[in-house]
Length: 168
Length: 268
Image (cartoon, rainbow over all chains, first blue to last red; front, top):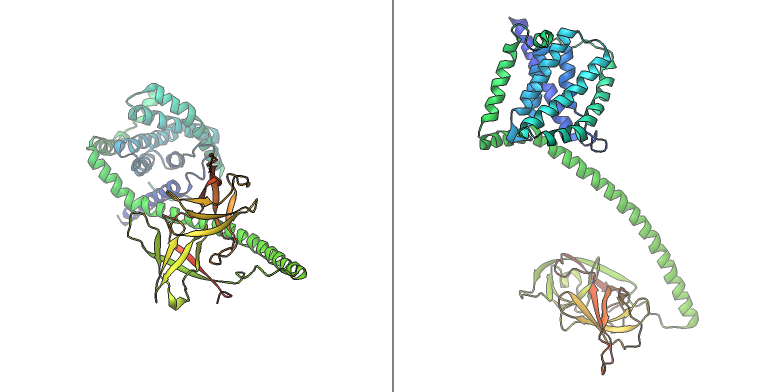
């Protein structure tokens, strides 16, 4: 029982750390990492990375909380980002478990598609299925943002794997 | 397509998504006022400290940049001042050689800083009260300036305060000249925050944007104090001898805060 409790505490601590990282990034570095208005989507990168590393359950957990902490900025759609990111985390985790993603390029492609999928769902639902507006955002913003985030993802994925905290 | 189904819902995994789904939907269907309250509260506790820290750091960086810029400007001004002093000394030497009477009777000034503590209680303030007086060495008729130029002169002195008559005051007159063409005239208050330059004959060369400085004639204001720039030149009507010239002062008379009283050490 004590071991189980320790694992829960570890998981909560790790989640708090991830959320702290996201808040720090949103507050300090969001503008710094922008290139010609193209933003680096760190939250999606973190969710995809953790989902690949830890699986679908943790992917959903981190996706939900990271999404929720970002939903604060759009109170009207509070919960929407959490739901979408939770679904992305869960799906990527399932991909990893089902298709055994090992190649770096397949992980990068999953990351790129996650950025697009996140924006596609978010704008479709928040604009009431306004296809024109949604595809404008996808074309002018999400596509480049996905490429830029994938570049960072590539760097992250080629880093040597260290002993990770066992969360599940 | 079975693999899609298998990766989305494997065994009891759909139970994993269920609580998140329910919680998200609950949040989504909340009334907007509640959502806003939750967001505001979370923002205050989670993001606000970081945003404030970020703001302070940016401010600090800007101040540091400004400080650097001002230090460079200060060095530049010091060099210019040094050069001006050299030229002043050279001027004195040449004047002595030519046996001219020295015009530098105001060359040594003591600058007394002051703050405006009261305005004349009229709709249009022509006089202001400063927080310095006899104790600080203020005397009647001493000129008052700020960073933008001449503001006025001291008209009444008490122990701890004094009244300053602004350039806009109908009674205030200053002997001036156009810096470029050395044309002399008299400045007095006009409508609004503008000043009128009188006694400039038609044939004299005064143009828009010419800088107007005090000439030192009259003995109250030292030579060289900036008054303003010519804004409008006109009034060439038949039967009139002088140009009608309006001067825009660099001083914002509606926002006077920190002023300096110039005390000439050679005045007494």
